[in-house]
Amino acid sequence: MRAKFDELSLDERRAILVASDAKYEDIINQIDWRKVVLAAPRVVVPWLWGPAVLWFGIAAYTSAYLAGTFTSAAKRAGDRRSFWQRWFTKGDVPLPHLPPDEARRLFRFDVGGPEDGGVYIANPCVPGHYMPPAVADERLAQEKLAAFLRIASTLGAKKIDVKSGESVGTESGGDAKVALPAAAAQVGLNISFKSGNTFERQMVAEFGKPKTPPHVPEELRGWLDMEPTLRGMVQTRLQGEPSAISVNLHFGRMVDIGSKLTAKFASRGLEVGGSYHVVSDSRWGFDIEFWPKE
Image (cartoon, rainbow, N blue to C red; front, side, top):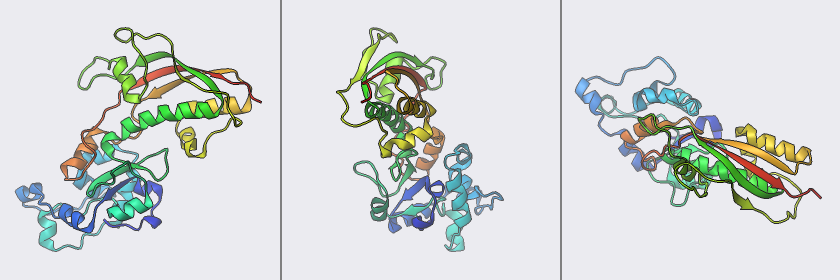
C-alpha cells in the first residue's frame, strides 16, 4: 500500500516494499491459488495483524522488530479493487511501499539497490539505511565488528588483540556446533587457525598515536544503544584513564526476521536478496591497549 513516508515513524517503516506502480499492480494481482482451490474470498481476521498473516502466514507473528510496521499497515488497509479481483488474487501487500526513484531519494541502499519489487529492512544502527532481509543478520554482524574496531580507534586504541573465541551456534538441523573458523568468517574476523577450532592470541588491529581526543563518531552512536558492552567500553575510556580494557562481544541474530519470514516474502513474489544467510552465535574476547590521554 502506497504510503506518505513523511508521516510514518521509523517503527511503522522498519520493512518497506520498493515497487513502481506497474510492478505493484503485478504483485497484488497475482492469482492466489489457495483462494482458487478453496473457492473462498479472503477472510477478515479480527486482529490488527490480519493482512500480514494472510499474506505471510503465521511467520508474521515471529518478528517483534516488524510488529509496528504490520500493525500500522493493517490500520491503513483498504482494497479498492473489484470484487472478483479481491476474490482470487493476492491483494495489497501489508507493507508501506514507494517507487524506486523516491526510495533512492529518501533512503540509502547498498550499491545497485533498490530493486523494483524488493523488500528492505531498516538498519537498526545506521539511520536511513535499508538492507535486503536475506542478508540483514550477516551484514549487521560484520558491521558490529567494524563498529567495535572503529570506536576503539577513536577512543585512542593502540592495539587490539583477539584472545578467545567460542562457537555456541549449531549447524542447521543438527546438534554439532558451527566450526569456529566459519563463525569468524561470518562476522568478518580475519584470524589464523592452527587446526580445527584452535588459534593463538593474535593482533587484529594496530593504530598510530591519535591526533584527536577520545570520542565516538556521531554515525556510530546507534551501536551504543544496541550494545551495552560497547557502551560500557566507551564510558570507561571517556570517564577514566584506563591503559587497557578487555571486551567480550557476542555475535548472532540482531533482528528477528529469520529464514521463515524471509522465505514467505520470497514465496509471495517479492525480492529478498537471495537465500537467507544464517549467522551462528559466537563469542569473542578482545584486549585493547590504549595510548595515554594527552
